[in-house]
Image (cartoon, rainbow, N blue to C red; front, top):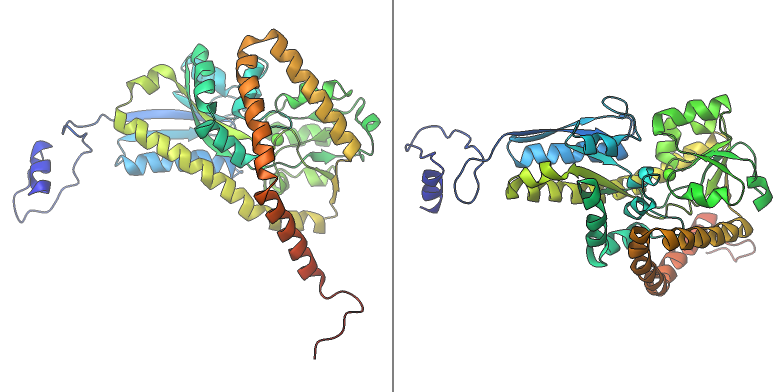
Length: 379
Ligand code: CA
């Protein structure tokens, strides 16, 4: 009876025995929901089924959950706008939404970087915690308002690698004069240490590295980096990407388009973006181990940044952010509570999580190494 009265309300009463026709999607009051067609500009090439795959997942979920009434067509980097022009395309209204890394736009305001990652910031879990339970989403929405954009966290790559270097980086002095493709505010930090940073979208990085326009480049991690081919022209693969402990990607939506969506479509889009966030972290974690093995088998040399290099970069980062906070009130408004959250997270994760992870890593290494030399043979 309940179903019948629902269908009646929806104006779709069915005669008994007739074949059911798929009902149009209706809201709680029984009104038909509108057909909405959006375009999404992504900052990624189609070849990256991790990061572009996340944007596609959002599109597919929204279409499936609305019976095809709300569609979002995804365009790869370069199809409508270049990888680094997604914010502009959303602001100008040439697309309704975009899937991108907010820190690409730090030149407009470095505060954007908190929606992705700033050097020595949060890992993927901490970023998720800050956004949803640490006041992050409220702070960032307040910031985005001035750009006429509504943001939804919609992806994360997990901790990244430090990138591909033609020459070894043995000391801080080796950074001097290095031309490097690097994302976000890390470029401001590395400038202090003599690096010449360049922001380049994914499709254009390999040609720049191959031609020697740049000496080093970072993108994400083994699986994506292997596809982009950097190992063919630079063999030293450094870690960690200390500027991207857990970089988030955002769905940027033109505020007026968001406001015009029915509540049901807003909820569906929010759910799809939240799913893409977790899906992407999981995908990277699942595919990176095998990709790293393949890279090593191609002669790639995996190297940690030295403690001296890391410490110098950490010091420079703190200086850069204190300087920016001193002259940019929007940045300072986010930075102060963000820093408190980061420091508390480090204290908490150092207890159970860190001890567990370190023990497990050591245990797996021991197991893989086999019985110690001289150990009595088991009978
Ligand atoms: Ca990166």
